[in-house]
Length: 177
Image (tube, rainbow, N blue to C red; front, side, top):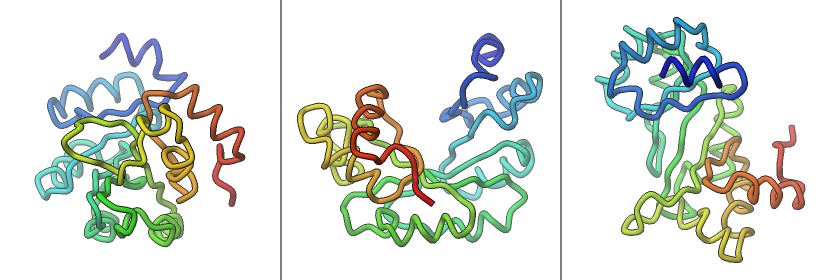
C-alpha cells in the first residue's frame, strides 16, 4: 500500500473499500503519506464501524454503503467522523435513495451521492439494472445516462473512457449547479 500511495496518491483519489480489513495499518499508511484528503473510506452502516471510524479515522473522508433507504446520514452527521456522502445501492427506480429528491437533500447537507454501475453478482440486481453491462451492450441511456440524470455525483464504473465519452456527448459529464 505504501507503494501505491506514494506512486498515485497525489494524482488520483483512492477508494478504500476494504478499509475494515486492516483499519489501523491503513490509517497509519494514509497518515504517513499525508493523504487524508486524497482517500475515501467506505463502510457498512453498523455501530461497530461508526465507533471504529471515530476512534481511528475521524479525519479521513468516509461514506456508508446504503441499500434502498437512508436511515443513517443524520445520525452519522452527529458523530465525530468526516462524512462526505453515501454510496447508494437500490433494487428499483422508486427506492428513496434513487430519487432526485434524495440527491437534492444530500446536496443541501453538502454531501455527495455515489452510485455504482458495476455488476458484482448476476444473481443480485443492483441499482435497478442501470449498469455498466446495459450501457456497453447498446443502451447507455438506461445505464449511465439514467444514473447521471438522477444527479449522482460519482458513478463508479469499470468502463471509464466509454462512460466519460457518453456523458460528455450527452452534456451529463458534470453536475450543473
